[in-house]
Image (cartoon, rainbow, N blue to C red; front, side, top):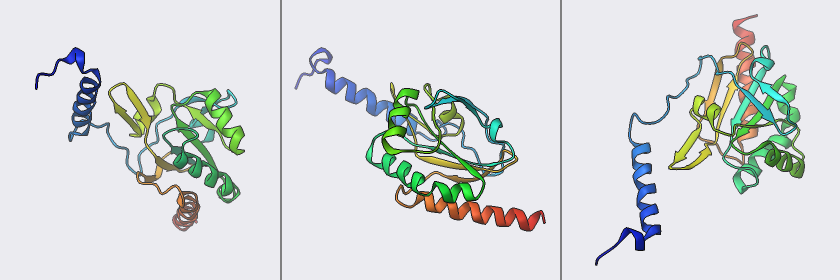
Length: 190
């Protein structure tokens, strides 16, 4: 069978994507992973209301920074709506919730309005913040944000990291973790 690249553009694209996948999946090629206890990287991103959000703005407060792949997809919608439904429980722990992905401010505005989301969605258009947090996934020209969550303590340090997330139960898991972390902090600093 004689294959010509010009005659097989789909095959060429598939092979290029597979090669990129194996290169990116190779050990040592991924972005460095943050760990609990490290200072959380600050950022400057605009939200769905065109307001500049920075991590520094929330210093002295607990922050839940959750990365998710794409607005209006089934898993991302489920996760966002569960965070919406449990938002009062998160705020009871004096914590702020910030969602992040590479969608635009306008796309975030439509998604937030459609699902009545009471928290900021940040537009990380070029994936800089996702890369800093090890939450960027790139396959050739395609880039998405991985579904990762970081709980950041009032001092700006990462208290917990979730690299595997169940969209059905994650918001309740975060509330439980906030309770545990606050109890631990109260015990250590009476």
